[in-house]
Length: 118
Image 1 (cartoon, rainbow, N blue to C red):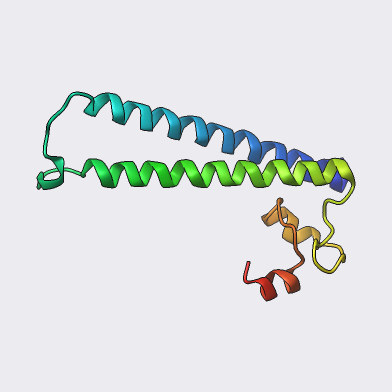
Image 2: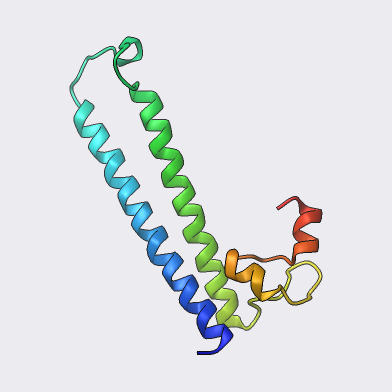
C-alpha cells in the first residue's frame, strides 16, 4: 500500500468516526429534548443534577466538534482527489508525512501553521 493509499485509508477511518460522533451527538440532543419535553422542572436550581442548559451546551459542543472534523476530513478528501493533498495552502511546499499521519486533514506545513497559529 502506497503512502497516498495509507493516508486515504486514515482519512476514511476518521470520516467514519466523525460521522458516528455526529449521529451520536444528534441522538443525545434529541433524547435530552424528549426527556425534558413537558417538564416544568426548575433544573437550573436543582442541587442534585446537571442543569439542562449545561448538558445542552456540552452536547452541542460535542456535535459542533464532530461536524467540524467531518468537514475537515471531507475537504482533505476533496484535495486528495484534486491532487493538492499534502501541499501547503500557503507556501506550496509539501506537508511532511509525519504531520499528515497525526493530522491527516492538515492544510499547512508546520512552519506556516505556526505563523497562522494553527
